[in-house]
Image (cartoon, rainbow, N blue to C red; front, side):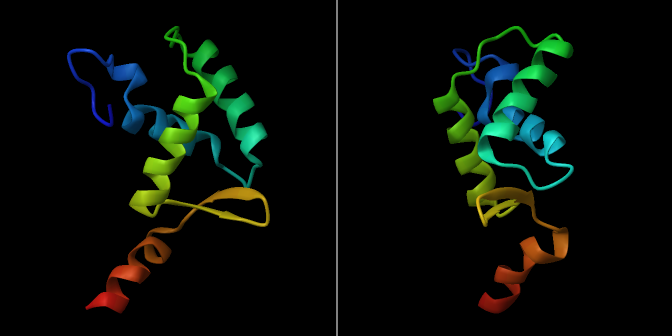
Length: 92
């Protein structure tokens, strides 16, 4: 489900939807704004496979687990590359 499989089309895989979410985060957005922008972007870019809100949230979970987004002050933001690498530096 994270990656495309025989049962999960490439445009519905969580990593694909996560990448599409990252495209929407050019500025800090609320979860609702991000959801709206993603649906508009998918419709405009010929991704007809339906994505439920639950699937969207699972994609956000993957992005959070990878350390590429953060949720602060009710806003989603992309983490900078050096911010995303910071926790790894602390462990070594």
